[in-house]
Amino acid sequence: MKNASRRGTVVVAVIVALVVLQILVYAVAVTGARDQDLTVRRLEAARSCYAAEAVANMSMREIGRNVDEDGNGTIGTVFSAATPPAIGPAGHRPGRLRRAHPA
Image (cartoon, rainbow, N blue to C red; front, side, top):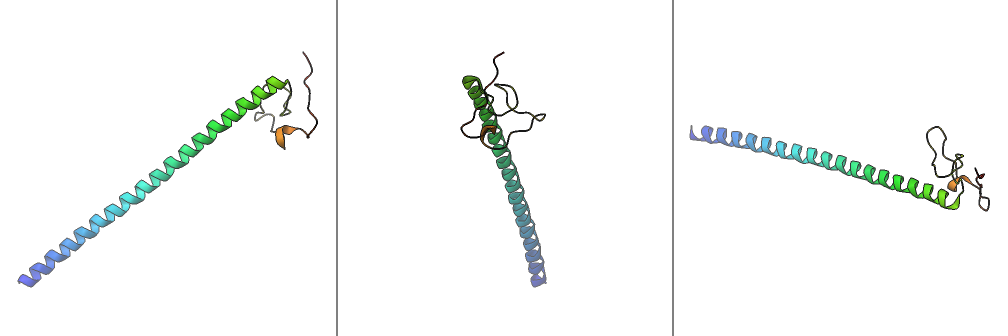
């Protein structure tokens, strides 16, 4: 009877240990997924910040040079969804700048 009692106790202990191990594995997986999601969000935020800074720099450059470098028709503004971006560096051929007409 003592052997059967010990075997039952060991089986219960093993089952409890397996349940605890499964909970730990689940917690590690969920934590990893959350960490990955936060990393992606941080990268997207950094990209957005750099894009906004680039737009501001381009706008200031256009105003400083008095040149419409992105070809959208207005100095100091950057292309929008209505006017797609020009292909190539700043939308002009090397050696040729588009001068704005004085208003």
